[in-house]
Image (cartoon, rainbow, N blue to C red):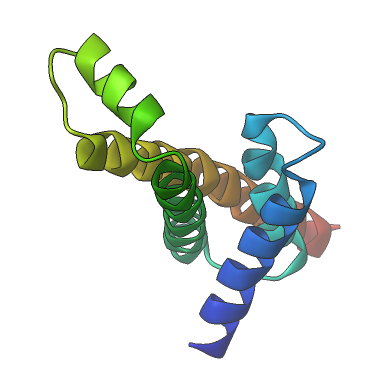
Length: 121
């Protein structure tokens, strides 16, 4: 449980700190790197990435949406046939979780590939 929380918080912290300077998709290679360096099973890494990405992107979208009084999310909702601002934030969280989860799964899987190959040498 402690490792799950540590990996999740590490992914969130690295992504949050690099956010102002790096592109949005940076969460995937950061999650891959964290799950490669900190040993996780692939399915557990997927869950860690989904939780980290969903919480981070959903939280950031929520707080930025509150700061501008739902202006942007309302306009995006109108663009997509009247979707509410809460649904726009939820979709943002799901996409963040998906991107981070797939990155984390990739990192954990690469670690297993290198461990198997190394143990056969």
